[in-house]
Length: 245
Image 1 (cartoon, helix red, strand yellow):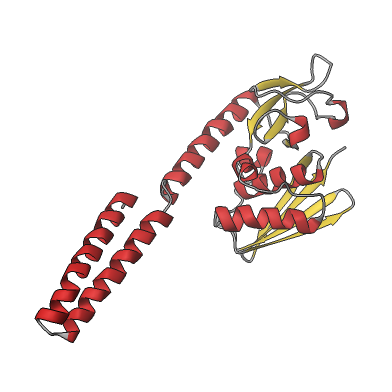
Image 2 (cartoon, rainbow, N blue to C red):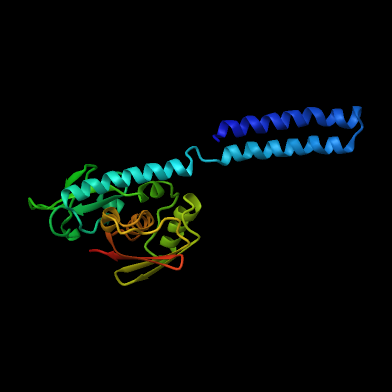
């Protein structure tokens, strides 16, 4: 059902109950019928409230769009033979939404990135001719845009931002914990709704949850990060991020 049927159903119940309630109480003099009419008003109001809170796009449609985009990106990476780990860039190093760079040759030396990475598919990250990469829009870009306050570099600030996006906005997990140790970020996600799969896309860019975490963490720390490992055990996903530079 879409929002409109919810609204129509709720308004019909509320109006019918509002009209019938005084009739049942004053003319028919029936308390049970009056209670039924008032219940219709309350159910109608609840249906209208549900229509306002229901997302415009159903979770099934959103999942289908996500899977389609992932399959297209995976096909491109596989066709080009790219299997290197993506590097997630903070906002200070890119133009537009969160980006992940997949090197065409070798590895990416983030210390040699001098200019902001443009919003293009194939980009140059260094001065040498072979310093080329594929720039992929990361799933965490939308979540970053919805944050009212940019996360800071501490574990608590990153944890708060990741919790807000994964749980508050997307309902993809039950709880989140973040630890910072030297140049490593450990993120534990309890009850993840999306799990890691050993497919080409995930091997390069990580799972959607890890990609969201990496996008938020690199923006908070202000340095590029790379997803080095993902483990899923007993309804808990452990994501390891390496801070580069």
